[in-house]
Image (cartoon, rainbow, N blue to C red; front, side):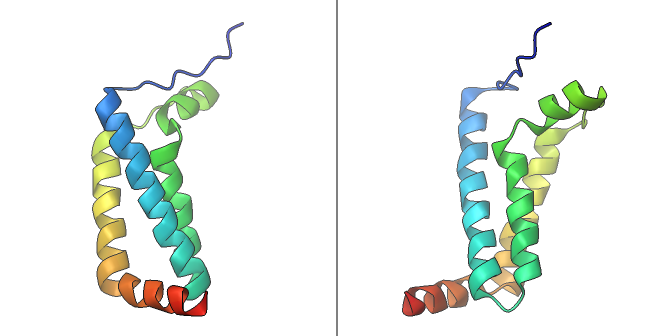
Length: 103
């Protein structure tokens, strides 16, 4: 029985971009969770960032036999939502300034 999970679901460049955006989204969630006025939104973005870190589609297929069709398109749309929400609604730069002032 082979329990190995395949980590490569596409090109290496796309995987690197996915991990880098996951780090950015994780940071955005962290800032919003601890220095924002809506910690629930920060936790929500933290949880969403894991779709960029983990091989979600592979783990889901292994556990349930179901895969998410078009996972890359979903990641792109989710990334646009995270950036839009953090920059526009979430006032990310104000929160980063508040974070650096408090440290």
